[in-house]
Length: 181
Image 1 (tube, rainbow, N blue to C red):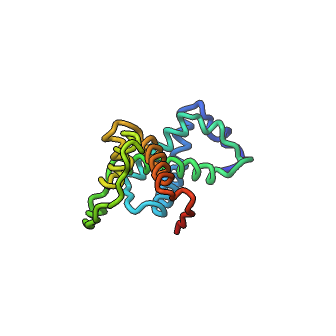
Image 2: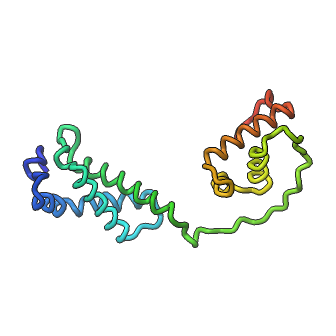
Image 3: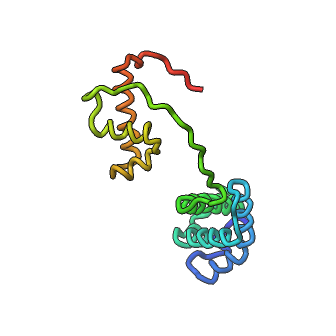
């Protein structure tokens, strides 16, 4: 492609937009496929086609053809950046919806002796007590605790942090330096 894409593909004319995608569909699909192969284990032709449609939709919807400037980047670079960002968004959306059953492994059960530490009554609020018990004794993640209590995961992490700070002060561990490996 030469310097001015607007001369070749008038973004207001539908037939020129179709010509743009006919001229560049292989480039876009190759960019999508090559990027996905470096980041994700499971990709299919269906994924590449879906992402290609998302790229086309994004370019048309946001009128990117009229915004392109060869002074800022080459057409190949411009298409790669759009393809890459749409691919990342698509795969993130996909990963939220399911987990591959082949990757699921049940973690072995480990018998952990009950702690001898007792938390004095009134030291923690009722909510802090609930969160600490669910996270440490119930071995639940913040997301699971949040679902149980009807609050956000960020709120669970905040409550846990506040409770741990209170427990450190109470047991005299707040001045000790923690070593993180």
